[in-house]
Length: 303
Image (cartoon, rainbow, N blue to C red; front, side):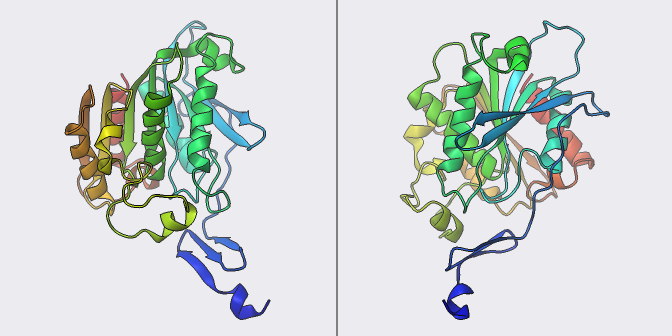
């Protein structure tokens, strides 16, 4: 194969990923890895669990500092962002954020590490998130494989949250729970979408490539606002949508918020707009005043 063929681009999503005609994938942001353990600042403990050995889907479980062996906490299932192609539940960015959020909200959390595109085309990440929520539900009767969930999770107060592409996955996971059901013992109370990465009517080369079976503009996995009927399938009773003034995806979050208000969702919809900030600023600069304010707002939503 000549060099002109091997160097020909079929997807250029710099500075995240490039895919070449010969199948080579080039990623520009390598995920670092932080081992689980006890966070010295918050006292939050964490451990890693394998959800599906066949697909290598894993999660990091976080337990807040406590002295009561019988204490129950609300349960948060968190899905990281990264445009479907980068980041990890085990990176320093998400490990540190979950430590802070778990401590502030006083919740137990399961942070999903799903398969990334384009090595794994969509809907792999959606299937992985669904596998994790089913794994969590298996603990509702106290007989699951993870003792922290059996002993400390309040399965009547379960929240899903995500940022950017993780918001996209989290939303559709809650829709799927409403359509397919989760069985008894698990109650999804709330959904938190931070700077959601939803599709609009503009062409999106990335989504077209990593999800070849997409139906286009009205695909409910990427454009909830085009599917008001499915919005009513959300099984949670309240939703928090977070946007930022300078976020390039802000309008998509606003459109989603308005669509939810006009749907038949039987619950409350809240919105938070952070002035002067950009996309996922709270992850890039977690100690700034606006990030700390947002952390407290998300925590209060779960309490």
